[in-house]
Image (cartoon, rainbow over all chains, first blue to last red; front, side, top):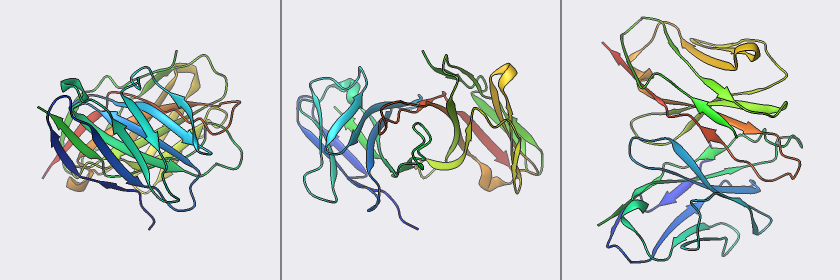
Length: 118
Length: 118
């Protein structure tokens, strides 16, 4: 079964360092997302990406964050200067368009990248 | 604003018992979608079901069933004859129908940690 793959599975970094989390979405999917889950808390939306641009972002997704689809397969999340509060599990997801029904897309999530900022 | 509440933080039952996970949502939209995702110990988020706001029929899939009641804004999930493998964190999520297609934002509840003891 097709899956979303994420690397690395776990990254430890020092505060202030740049981090890039990588994702390979399912090949025929058109929409790409990043969500995060701080330990023990709910999963929160960060950003959605479609047609090579951000379609929506949350208040969490400030200037320290950026996303890119550098080639036809990878989708990356960059945190420019990490803070302690960026420690979380970051989930990449992708979806096809559900028959033209906005909001109905079923997201397929990756296994997550755990980021620990020291 | 949209909100999803899963009041049960943790549930622990003995194998073969039935268990119901509660989900209550808030939205001002008339068209929306509700989802359940499972997060096993391995960490990934696994899609279980999607329901649109116009379809109030209950759904059964094997030992899983879902009860959608628009009048009480609830979308509860029941596992019949629970098994140890059902142990996971279960998330309820809400997505509104967007006029601008491509933007998919899931609002998650806090999750319910379900432990099935042998």
